[in-house]
Image 1 (tube, rainbow, N blue to C red):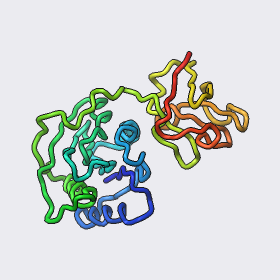
Image 2: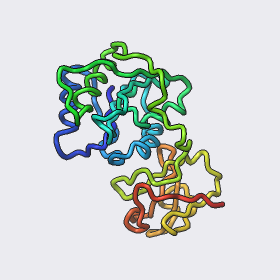
Image 3: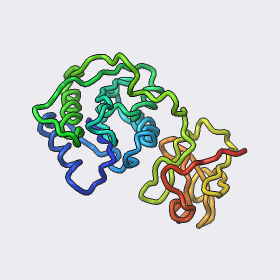
Image 4: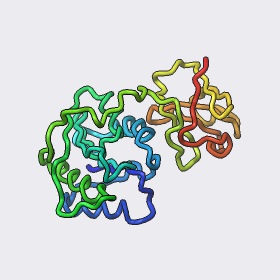
Length: 242
């Protein structure tokens, strides 16, 4: 399986063009959209999502990841093997949390070049062909990485910020709920939020936080929208209080 993780959105030609390359070069291999709306131009917030959501896929899955504000610049193009899952994309920190949390990793600089490489769409021209090669079982087309230009050692293990707002207005944080005290409370946008198990544990219109189905601490409003009702957006800090 090839899983797409991008900030392209579902409008416009970008995802379609990448999928066309994948279908041409790796026919018969399923292609799914994991995230088409990752935080736009924000590899840091995206890294905390990717690390959690990729864990639900079996070894051998190829993640084609494009959150790439530095496309065409000096950032490296990399391949990562983390616990048997493949990741292809820009070396801008997007894979930092995946690599940090994995038991075993290997990484490569991509040295394969297509006949035509645009300056602004490496997702289609470079990363998609490499992802197709890996999905076909070919070896990584590159050399083992010899530096840490793609690493972000200063990023925390868990990020106390909103990293994603879903279709329902729920605000995911970069915090793994399992790392927090059972009675932890949050302060976000001036609101004090208690922990609950699920939505129906609070009256309609009440705000709270809970462990979402993928293990992240998420802020929600029962029968409401946390983004609208609390004024939450990507990047807003979350304070943990006892």
